[in-house]
Length: 332
Image 1 (spheres, one colour):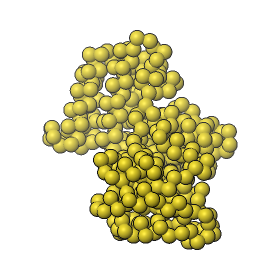
Image 2 (cartoon, rainbow, N blue to C red):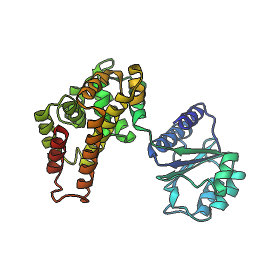
Image 3 (tube, rainbow, N blue to C red):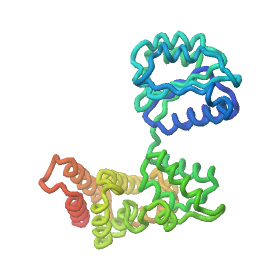
Image 4 (cartoon, rainbow, N blue to C red):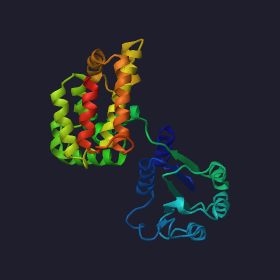
């Protein structure tokens, strides 16, 4: 995250490198850097002449080098972006040789998505010396909330803590989906208007009453009937609420309750649990109902539900049956 922010600031300050090797499992940060470079280097006049997009599946390293060695026709710099670069598994040493003597009027960007670039390769070493490298890593669960808050603030949106949590539960760690949701809210919300859960429910299509966050809340309150109602809704809306996401969220939930029990200083709860201080009271309440021993048993039940969802254990693998069985095990 820090490396990404550093690169982003350099680009916005118009401090460009002749070569960027952007790799990693989180494609969002790679896309944002390419978008920012495009905004900075390409205008309406130069777009048709000094902006080239190539695809690793369709081009060779020789074509990339040939394109990069051309001189800009309109502006002072040309931008060459190679998408799907992870499919370029041959002749990368030739590209390393180019990077060591890169054309100063070209900014060449290699987008190596969904995998980290092999740092033993000659191209990586050349990039370290003559260009800039990014290993784009997914955010941890406890980083999503702060990132979401920072993004909404940058877009002049005022998310309430509950709305922040609702978006996290619904969209998970998919940063691109979160960004699109914020952009949609930006179009319909007046400046300075607080964004409450009902606003998200109406404009984004998330149910504030029936979602994974509300299921956790019902469990923490020991409200069995409400938990079953939510489970029925989630099971009937699997496209919107996949079972694997529900099970994963419950696993994190009970892990956090166990962490809460283990705290020496309750004031550290928001940082350790990775949640907003707004929700600490809910974890306090849940901890009264779920001791460390009960949390351990609950985690075993969630794990068993995960095995059933994958067809490894049990006979009835319907989402409804799995969730109901899980709820029964949590109340016994």
